[in-house]
Length: 129
Image (cartoon, rainbow, N blue to C red; front, side):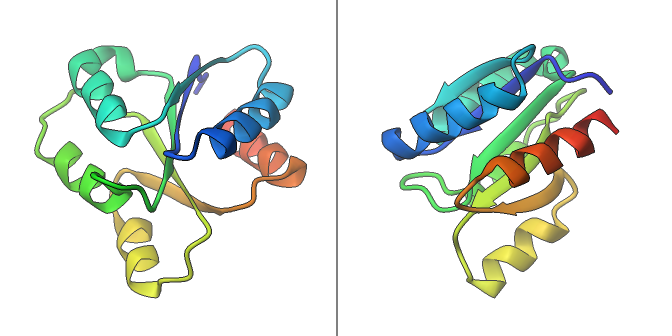
């Protein structure tokens, strides 16, 4: 599948900026959209529906207000015809949280922070299949 857009969701602006630079380096042909809150991203995804085709969502696990687990639960309540491919980004070692997201039907994989060139290259290989 060709991915047209990457949605990056992280509540820490500095982390978001650094990750954006790294992602743009390897995905220069792909539109990158940053979200500082998961509620913004959820609204965009649920309103877009069919436009979610070709979207990869890189979602931070631990965020205030709506963390990735609650985000996934909210997304499940929507009957979308197309869902983005979701990758969870985390530094967490909480096994309960990791087990939940790894087993979720929409989550393709968990990527551990800090992101680096090797991590981004591996993601690109996975996405380009």
